[in-house]
Image (cartoon, rainbow over all chains, first blue to last red; front, side, top):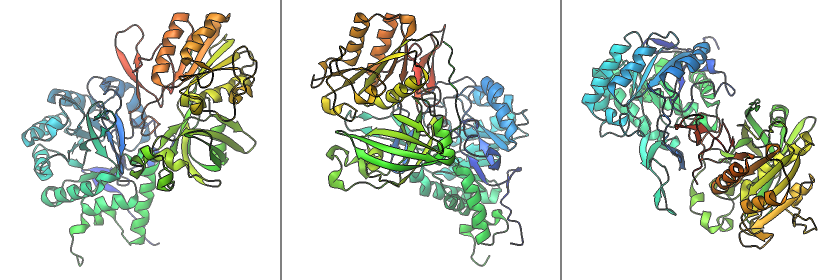
Length: 315
Length: 316
């Protein structure tokens, strides 16, 4: 091989060594995974959702397995902002990779307060705004389905973190994700992540009741991948390509081939979620696989592939 | 109480199946072998810890051999690993063997019944925190409810090896004789206590067996047999400890017994879990906070699966 393959990514101004991140809520605060993989081999790390106050989360059962997927309704259980800063941030800082903090809340003020407090931390490259959690009664997805609200919350949070990257994570549970994507961009989003889980339900036919204590949960895993690829591609074509805003693609990725699909659809980077539950070192294996794919296809720069599904074969 | 448990090295390892066979109505036993790094890691396995088994690639048995009530659910592919505690772990020079006792309950365990000698099985472990022995104990009361047998058997093994100062008695409860999670026939010998269960007898531990229908042992609940023993046998509460694994209603009943008799009690809890390593936060166990009315959710996979009953708020 004569040339070095460049799989680094410029993600809204943040340089990632490779396009693979961990999806929020599936990789804890990073210390849990350190036994299983070299965290520094990741392109980036997204924390589980942080709220202003600690949250206990929902009663159990919180998960149920489905065909090629699982439902979760954890309810944003997290240690809260202060403990996150004291206990988790030093671990993330030491990893020396791009860290994005996923921020959640029930009011715009809460989102702003968390972001404002963390915006000065040098360990943090940016934020992922969770306005699409299907499992909390107030906030979350209620912010994520109304375009006017998306724009308002994005603008308010962006004002609190001018110097950092703001990713807005969108829910697939809307009529037209291009509309909500445009609203996030209008509010000043630097990037989008697509998609969060699909709201779903499993019923126990013995008890004739929902399996999850929360009744519904978010469907993730291989089952949602083709839908997620479609939604990434739709937003890429309709919204972000012309705006020059990168997409973080996620939903059912467990192999390098899955990741490449998202990139071809228009994602600049990808995140691995549910697959890490089964194979904790999965994300790093995907990084290697992407490099091999590029080597085999004589791709010198991974960015050539972003959105390539819609490019002219001759171009 | 000082909790001296440590979290030893864990990882993803490949086990080789040495044998896999049916041992009871719906019970199977798989003997696994670990070599190299897996042998080293699993050699540190503490009774009550668990491993996550990936059965997603294991093939289903012919449909007509699948229990009728599980046929529909077996149409579903398996995605997630399943947690299992080992019943016996033996570390040798360059290999560690482990006995995986499992009950056929769903699509993953139905698949596991087709495992054959030589098959490879991916395992994440050892995970969680197991049983611990507080200082000054001289009596251990081991309580098994149904499929709660594996971690308690493993504990019997380690107590025998590491705590000769402790006398143990096992209390085993099941619905019927057929659902006793042990191999071999019960030797109805002349112990004042009742029966010898071979799995405990090999460590010199006598067992009291009870069933819901009286088909073997007395017709009683295992908690009742424990209370009867406490009534009839001299013991010093501060030197006695109850260790248990079984259905949650049994564990909560034991917690009340332990409180009344002022005896330490550790139980191995069970929750639905996706990852087993603290990522998914699904295996929450509600726990008391000392000096507060508040409660917190601890994680069964990391803070447990073994808990002191004084902290747990049981669901059943």
